[in-house]
Each structure stands twice: as structure tokens, then as C-alpha cells.
Image (tube, rainbow, N blue to C red; front, side, top):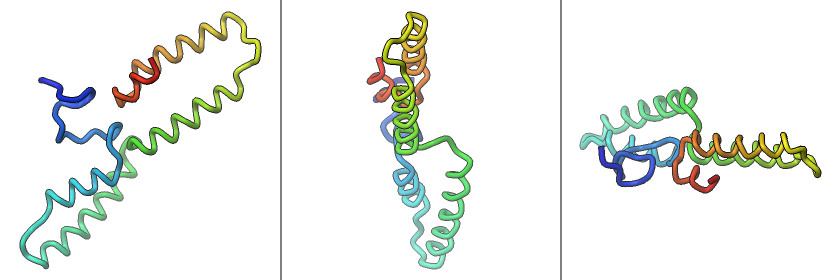
Length: 113
């Protein structure tokens, strides 16, 4: 499979770690359009129900992931000692290496490297 963008198989593929929830909802709505007004009303209602259900059962989207990551990293920084031991420095270095390797959005992960 040829990747056109880091972390994605193709540009039209949705990735919750790279895209926000609103983008996903717009994609779903665009795929569900019908010519008949009655079908549209039913589908919009169905999509809204599905969106709520899927969103609550899914991993974080890019905005939620970003806010949570920001919170985690800034909390770690706030508790980081002024004069860390060599072991603490090594632990933080290893943490960032692994964090960047495992972070679900590849373009974001590159910023941690």
C-alpha cells in the first residue's frame, strides 16, 4: 500500500488521530445524501445518532488527543525536578522516544522527535 501522507493509506482515508470529529461527521453526511427530502431527514437523524454513539465509543480525535497530550506533557513538566537525577533524565528521554514512536498521528509524532 502506497502512503500519500504520513499515517494514511490515501488522502481521502479518515484517521481519527489526524482529523477532527467534525471532519468525520461531514464525511459521513456527504456519503449519506439522497435526493428525496424524506430520506434525507431520516438519514440526518440516523447519522446524528450514529455520530454520538460512534464518538463515545471511539478513540480521541485529533483535537481531543492534542488537548490531552498538551495536558499530560505540561503536567509532567510542572512536576519535573529542577535538578533531576541521571536516572530521571534517562527516563524522560526514553519516554519521549517511545511516546513519539507510539503516538497515533505520525505528523504530530515527528514533532516529538
